Image 1 (cartoon, rainbow, N blue to C red):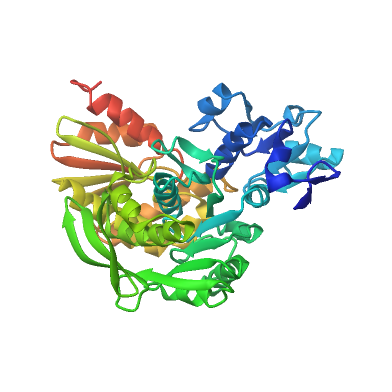
Image 2: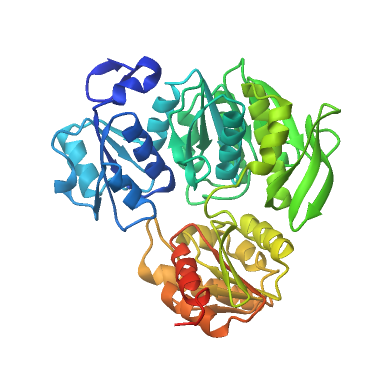
Length: 480
């Protein structure tokens, strides 16, 4: 492939060799995918710098790896000799570093375009799409392929300690990425294989409705190579509709009898499932997961189908599934003290919240479940307000701090949106309270938590800081 990165057309031998010794600046480097891309670029030999408006999880690792990271956005932070500027989807044109790059005539691409360039460096790209479950399924697929000796490259929005981080170049033919639908980012990819896990209402500040979202997933399905494979959730009618646009062969997965890849004989123990996988009516895998939740069985079916397509044997898959440890911030156990269990999760959509709380209760069997939920994006909170209001039905108390606004929203909007969510929760019969700051939320939990309680911190922002504080204050012999 040939592409334009620094103003001159350059050959990209496999798409990745050309990044060696290039100077790449990432604006919004703290984003879930951008941080992984920065690490991957350094692994490829690029000189990386970047900026974000606030300190972020994983920043220390980037700095220790050699990246120059600045907090805040200022024109002077853009290196004078930069070869390529990469921006996250959240960066507006008014950003001073982006404006300086435009004025200089620097090459500027979006994160999704960078991922597309990287994918071109591998013989077989694999893209996992869906409103929910992308990170877990991508990591699970990478784990299965690695255990099969395929040594894939991968780039994910969440960290897998088991795999060694969010990204790796790998020595194999495959490059596994989670494919984000926001801003139609996944249409920058041209994978050989892929998955549509589910299609749900989200990003309604960008899409007009669910039909518009489904059409975008259909366009993604059409991007998969005609000689490749798309696996699709047969239990999700919107995903099935999107898959009809595929040029590639389509295989379905799910729990009903019509699915190509079907899970049956499910047996639950402490929230986790043992099950048998049939492929077109023949048993091929009998295994279990160490992750709780029935939804993770569906994720596993997609990962199994893609790993088998990549060349993993069923016997290897069967042995590897129970050893998959998940990714950070996906129902992650953080600590236990004084009879209180603390769990952190990334869930920020009503569907995710509902199934995650249900799975956690089955896993831990608590006396009470207290949830500190930090809404993510004012637009999402407003547009899905009623869905949020009924998604906490299995929680005994919900504490809501101000909305985390990674994109554009005023302080008053973040406050008013959080207060309105609490009002709706109370109208629906939930015990809920608004506490503006994360510190206030942590203080409330410490004062009111009881032995036998499960405390869950949830959200896509920085609510994990509450989990950090609770571990420090509750899991010590004495509260501080």
